[in-house]
Length: 139
Image 1: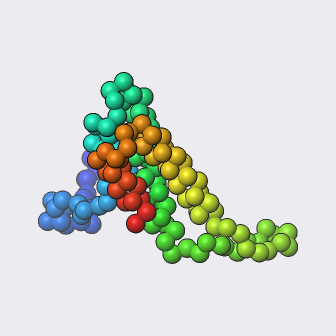
Image 2 (image 1 turned 45 degrees about the vertical axis):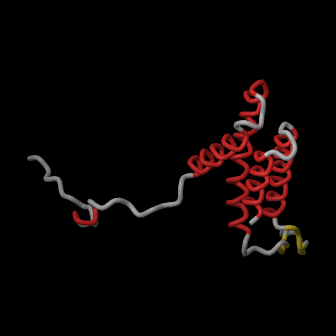
Image 3 (image 1 turned 120 degrees about the vertical axis):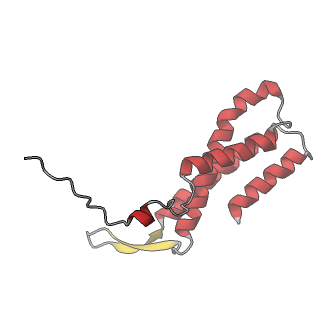
């Protein structure tokens, strides 16, 4: 005898037909969006012979910007110092590990931006746009 298949879904057919609610963009989409911004900013400012060498730097900067934004949101309500207890009787305060990681990310991001700006002529619109890109990370 064949078993009868039963619909165990608790979602009504009316609701199931609706599109899912808006969710934040995936991290990869956010990185792609930042990379697109950086490509636009640097399009005419970096000579073609350097352009191919710069592409991995742009990809890393886009990745770092997304990570910095996420880390900032995670750390917004955290204290800079956190208590610790190592279980051996030692207790005290230490720097929150998230802040240490954020500082390392920001240092790496800043170095990458410096490399990029060094390849651009001073006073160009691209350099100004890059400054705006950096300021988005600090908000």
